[in-house]
Image 1: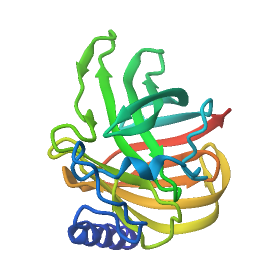
Image 2 (image 1 turned 180 degrees about the horizontal axis):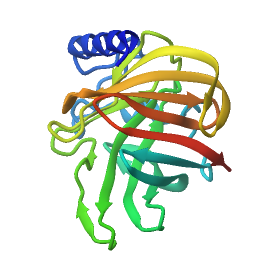
Image 3 (image 1 turned 180 degrees about the vertical axis):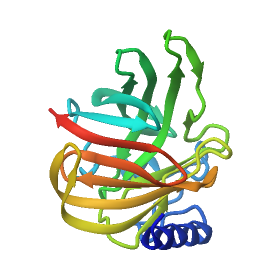
Length: 243
């Protein structure tokens, strides 16, 4: 690992240690209703504002390719027109499917997101499963839902993503504890899949896997266009097309 990467990882670890679990430098939500302790007030979502770096327009499809060690995958992320209510908030269902090169299902996830009136995009949970090569469900590790068993929604993309904004993206104790730090705004980025413009670069990590640090690039109008582990992991995915 280069000295620059070591410095980035050390800084990320320091920020993670300082976070109390709430968003830093974000518009503060009002008190949550008693039915969903710790979660944002549903009234904040009555008139949602689109976030260009995390679009939730139904019908948007992004296709990615990637590797995890020696394994190769292709991923399709679709913003559906389906909604459900989580912690009192009407959320958009984003369907994420990962397949092996032979077409067999490796992972299938429904993620639940909602934008508030300021344009912050909140992550309210996921229903996820991993599958073996024969299509049999192996486990549902990582599934969680805000308002259930103490789980709390977090901000996955702030309305104004600028360094050095940091936030908890999700919290379900022992299940989902990811955090993120906006480290850079870029005019463009070139990935294995091409060049995209108006970029937000983040570092993300979890208290459950403290040695793993992932870098992500979000492009205006598309969302994630590249993500790769830069410490202790081997995952690398990049956008190849969108529609």
